Length: 490
Image (tube, one colour):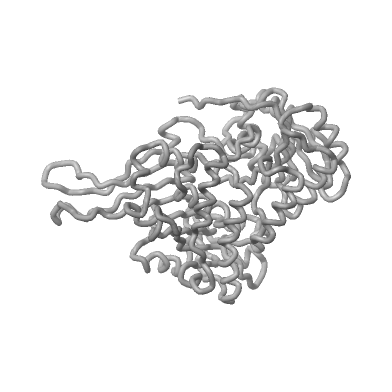
């Protein structure tokens, strides 16, 4: 099967923080892949911007290294890579002064009237300075967009401040708050499963679904980001954006269309319907942990405090939550959320556990009857499993087995699975905001997260320790088993 590629309109993309980790690991390789696929028009330009003095040729070499070092690329075709590098330019600009902005304006004016994307691959403390100078130097055109990376703030108050700073220069329909999880193929297939099939939507409610689990597990530690991570923690870094967005896609009502605002209106309703977790309920509904030294597939690994280089820290590297949605569809259905670092494996998945059958017609020799469940795996092997009860083949009576209908996207379609950034970058150029967060979504998520953070601060209890290479503190197991359920690791 050959994936259909639709060329986008000519564009200039200006990457602030172009010499940083995000640009080198994700953005430049993603743009190369889209160019390789023939999706980028011949006259599109990629303009790297950072404070570091650098020639165009030096930045092209950085871009070359970024593409050649990327995991999953076995061979680099020299001719096509040369074509991509010919699009790449560089301008040295100081985000906190007026140095270099005249040069950037002159370079952009060469592109004429075309789509202009400003990608802020920098820390949120620079958003205000950069956007203010983009506006002051007259770089905003009717076809301009700005891409804002997470985190959008550290709480509701700071998120509002960031949104106001960006909104003073760009209208809301030109602001793209990116969450790369929403660009994953399986996440979008969740909407296809729900809204393009008659099978699931009639049973997608509390009458048929027992509970939902969402797991985003990482086997690595802070990977050189301990300084940043210690100011954030798992709740801010993963739950406030990635996991709550996944919860919204599972729980939202069918939108009237796939129009961006129609989808985001329904996600916002879910965020507003989340039952608050406060100081009174947080001890029973939340668990936070911090990994200690242990072992992984690569051998012994240090604990979080050793990686941080500090004798103490209250920052959580693991979170488990029991959330509820107060509406007719989901009343009484718990959503169990967990995420953490230094867990046994890297896996992100959604488990929709259906209720057991009300009555079994089979005798005891058939074996236990397990409830159906739908498993949607986001990474590393994107796919969908539907667990069903079937008869064990052969004579000798009715023996039942619990087996999955297993569809791996790589095997089913036989095409390369694009990185999330590839899809999202092209959506920015098209002006399609469906997979991006609106301002009111971001602020509604923080409104739910803030009381949890406050409850943890006021409790003065440190995160519960867990050994690296395990599934977090034992309290996270107790959190779900108190309800007579268990974490499912398919």
